[in-house]
Amino acid sequence: MSMVFNAAAYNDSDSVPLNVTGSIYASSCTVTFPGDINLGTYYRQNISIAGANTSDVPVTVNLTDCSPFISKATATFSGTSYTEDSGYGAILYANSIADGAQDLGLQLFNSDPVVPLGNNTTYVVNIDPVTKSVSLNMTARMYTPHGSPTAGDFSAAVTINFTYQ
Image (cartoon, rainbow, N blue to C red; front, side):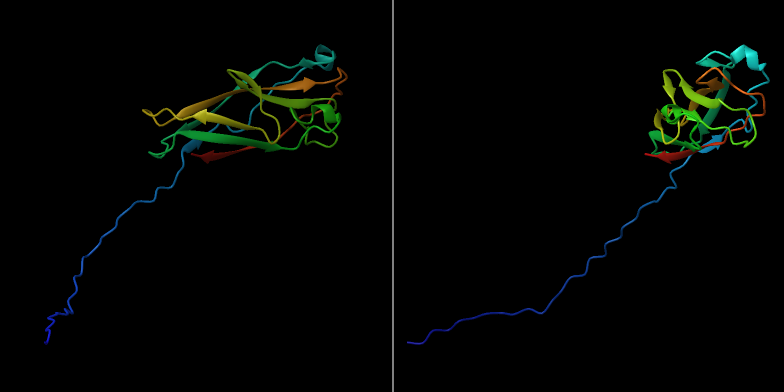
């Protein structure tokens, strides 16, 4: 008895074009800031009490025109920490003028809620989803830890680096 098996082999193929598209956005905002900030001129004896400070000076940094997919920005603060008393290094910035006023540091903090914005501090702000903007409202002032400031000029530099999420 013989058996017959029939089989067929096909050598066909199908090609399907697959097109993929996407977009890459530069995640950023337009940052505006006031430039140099004048903390004013004071008489030494008016702040010669430990923990005294000069008048509060408002400082606003605006982030506007933020990219569509950004929901928050993280501000990282950096500058030269106050070294005259290491206990204040995390919350005060040092006077950068070598022969300037001593026993004075720059105190920078967020206005609402009050959060010290010292060296290496990060602070997160939420971007308004409708306006695609936010304002970082801060306060700057000179602060004397020990109440013995010397006469002289004062200057401190703070860099704020924004990363976006």
